[in-house]
Length: 248
Image (tube, rainbow, N blue to C red; front, side, top):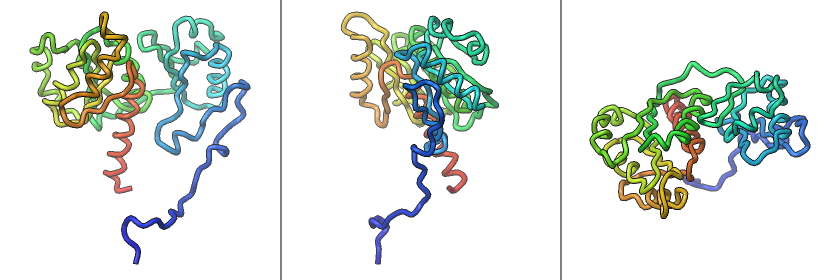
């Protein structure tokens, strides 16, 4: 008699990455076209260290194959250097440094997601998260500039935040805000340390360590300034909630 946790092989169809690759026009690129099918989140293109020709090749392939595409950390200079026809084919947001090829929407409000920033200086990763969520089909409410230096600002929005299923909190300096939020709300709290701060803030390392050391139970943390990572964590939760609801 086998137990619930035996080691019997799972006989399910396996989708191998070697069968999901396509004819990439740039020799340095092997795009993961099947990632969305496998995990529910499509491959995004991190543009920061890529050449313009690499970005152009990836984008042109997606356009010609009628695929949607999310590009992150795309600087204004990189965008301006792209061929004009490719620039016209995407929706570029300089604040979030993201570009989106293909349509967005309508956006779902279930689960309910809030993006909370300690200060306006934390806006860039927040904007990156908001665009990533929109690309993934999710709406999000913004609660900005509610850092703990003026705690009344956060408490004035407490009821709204308590209604949220997922709260993504962006904070630099001492990053106390995620812990305070997690002590007030029942939803999932994802902390995003930002590189905002002076001196010993060390480009966000103090904020990261602070959230990692949070005394509030169940706080999750992503890397410094990683709005994309926080948003995709929320998208995984959303996908899981949909699967649970449908009984899959």
